[in-house]
Amino acid sequence: MLKTCALSGILPATLLLAASFFVLLAARKAEKEQALKVFGYVIVALLWLAALIALTAGIYNYPYGRRSLKCMKSGMMKQGMGQMHGQGMMPHPEKK
Image (cartoon, rainbow, N blue to C red):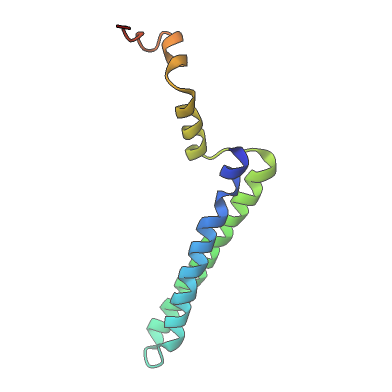
């Protein structure tokens, strides 16, 4: 489970790069509007930066075993409520 969570940076990076392809395609086709072309290139640069950050975060998390908040939350939910009942945080449910 840990390695799957750590490699989850690949999916957002792929989606961001796919979106940047279409933005770049639209920016190159904007012949008359120079401001629109510059805006498109700025958006593409930001998407590439976000993809790079997502990918490097996934690579960094892989060997060190750092867990993201989402992965930690799913792990806590799998443990169930049994530990909370034993610690006195919640009353035991009445068994019928």
